[in-house]
Image (cartoon, rainbow, N blue to C red; front, side, top):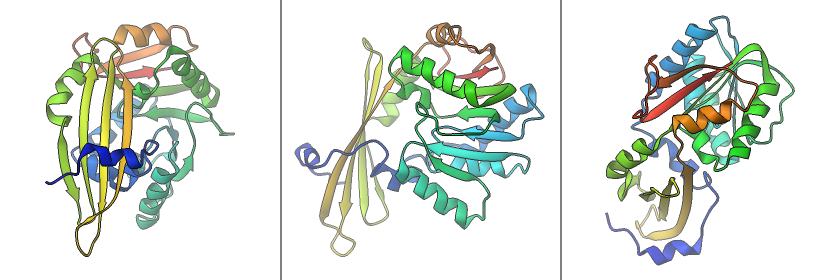
Length: 264
């Protein structure tokens, strides 16, 4: 794939999940959302089997919410800070005749006047928070919209996962249809524990295939350890019901790649 020189991408640097929203589902095509959906449902059945009302944070293009709806016993409000992502989610919901409600909302600035049995967020959305105050604010926001006995479920990735991920994420190039191609450069700063994914997106002419527009989105995640997240949870009103290893209902370990927190 013949990508343009890096200099051209300085022309238009976009906020996260604007241009990328158009190709997000293609970028994420390797993610097994059905398995992830089954796992979240399994956690709910294990710890709060009577739950009905769910709130998803950082829902992206709605794939997870639409999949969870297929169980047939949840009422779901799915939210994301990106208006572009929500617009795509709504189109997918309309096509599937879904009852999932989608709303543009930043999870650090809640705009909800109802309560839920479960609040969940997946695919290391927590790692987009780079300081302790924001993580504590998120937990407080969630606490205010949970019913008594409600659960907050989320996952985060660890330093070991970032180290492993570079081998298959860095310098990945792909074409999406005939009009878009992208390259992802992935770097991990061990000292500061920052994982940076830079998406270089080119839009092409459908007639000639020539370059029309170029964009860059830079996504930075702070990578946490189980000990750090546990210490922060202990500063909130939540109790830790479980910290699971990956997609299994077994306790997380120091060498876990992904950890799922279940808080009450």
